[in-house]
Image (cartoon, rainbow, N blue to C red; front, side, top):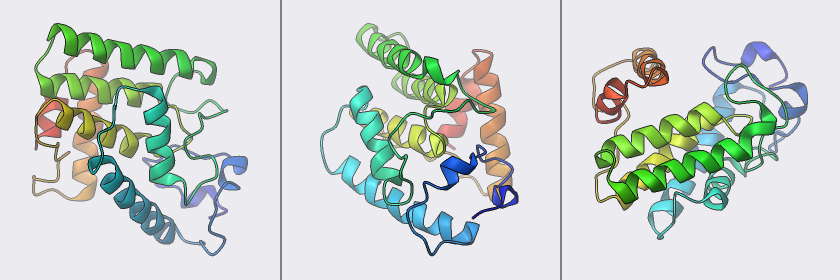
Length: 194
């Protein structure tokens, strides 16, 4: 895990310092890292859905990221300290995350959108902020799933119900996010339920 070439094309690039935050010293292959992260995410998912949590709390959001990646990365649950090729400026993270939470609270209180759209808009806002060095997509999808459940809806499938390859699923997801960047959430809602 020392070469930038190990990074998949869709992953947020990690700095050398961020790579040094890898906790398990035996990991040398991307496949090994993916397996460890996935195991940690499954544990976090169980934790999140076996308790009553408020997905509209900055403290919970940081804790969720830590639960998802804390056994793999030392910086899990801490806001990134470098700017990335995606996301807001690192100095704006706390402000923009607070804004995303408050917007979702407003949408729920005023029934501005249907439940699925509220959760998808929340997901998009979290991805847009991109507060952590890595894992933002997986983290924001789980946070949205928790919100969806709190709104009385079934969890999203995020493209898993479709008979697609991983690359096709990823492409459809990115295309839907780009449409949402232009305030068209139709494709992202459809993808979340596909």
